[in-house]
Length: 232
Ligand SMILES: Nc1nc2c(ncn2[C@@H]2O[C@H](COP(=O)(O)OP(=O)(O)O)[C@@H](O)[C@H]2O)c(=O)[nH]1
Ligand SMILES: [Mg+2]
Image (cartoon, rainbow, N blue to C red; front, side, top):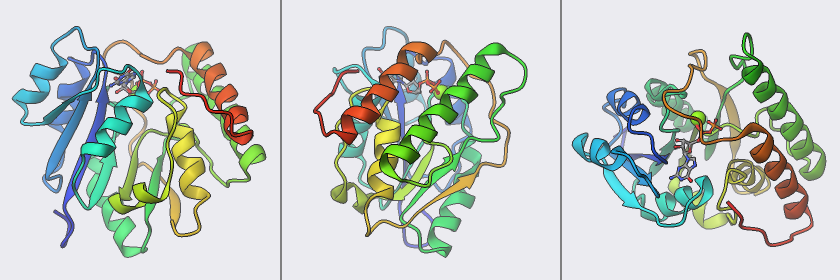
């Protein structure tokens, strides 16, 4: 609880038995309920989440977007927070971000992942560049002033979900959500930097940089032209 508001944390997880405990160990006391959306897991993700007392949601349709849609349908708290199941987002920062949401009368915060750890490995440099390209296209095609369209850590009032439409079953859901909320007059949005440096992932990445980068880009054009597309 923060003030009079209940707080829920939704985490999509596909084979994250190692990462999920890193995240669940760090969940702050202000979070009342944790919802882990496990789909098509062939490892012990669900058992680990249950051991921590999380509510496990089984989503048979694979994909980051379909996991979030199931999580958003199930979450029943006033404030909703999200994070990956791989330990890359600082869930310890959630109380500060929720305070910020309430104090500034905001409806939606996207935690900005930049400055990212784009030093060092080629993978990180490519990730950083991919982010920039997708964010630039989001700005040009939709005229949204977003600095990091790919961030997966959000803090918002649950009621905004009734005002937007999410269609993607795959990774593009992240940019789609931002296009929707930034495009809605009734939703007051902001991006806030996260204080810790973006830590490296626990477990195997589900995102394939070239494949998902390209799909995310195609999704932006399809959404601009309002072509239905749900592929994971
Ligand atoms: N439930 C579910 N989660 C997924 C799926 N694909 C990815 N995820 C989760 O979504 C989050 C983001 O995936 P990740 O590989 O970390 O992508 P990145 O952070 O953009 O590199 C992780 O918590 C994954 O476990 C999926 O098909 N289903
Ligand atoms: Mg991740």
